[in-house]
Length: 122
Image 1 (cartoon, rainbow, N blue to C red):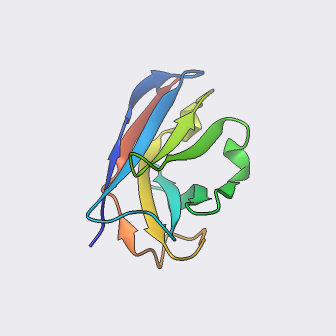
Image 2: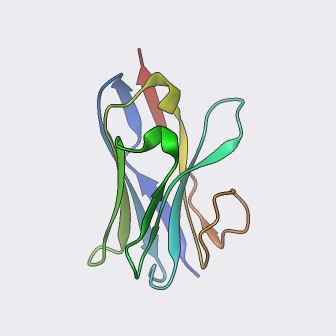
Image 3: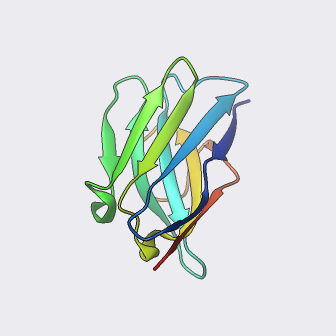
C-alpha cells in the first residue's frame, strides 16, 4: 500500500514563502489525483489544491490562486506545493491526500499523510 509523507512545514513572517513536499513510498502516484488540504485550529479541513498526476491538470481554491503553485516530480515520485506571499490566514496543518478522483471535500481519499504545520506571523 502507498504511504504518504509531508515535508517542508515551518514558521515564516507574512509575505514569506514555504515549499511543501508530499512523497509516496510503496507505490507511485500514477493514475491518481493528488490533493492538498489544510486545517486551521478550530476550523474545518478545507481543500487547497490538486493535480492529476498523469494529465498534469491543476486546481486551486480561489483564496490561494496566484500565490500557491502545485507541481510534480516524476523521478522523485513527489508532489510539491510552493506557497508564496503567505498570509496569517494561511496558518494551518497541511495534509497531502491521493485518490482516483478529484474531490474537493476531505472524504473518500484512499491515502493520507500525517500533516505538516505551517505558521505565518503578522
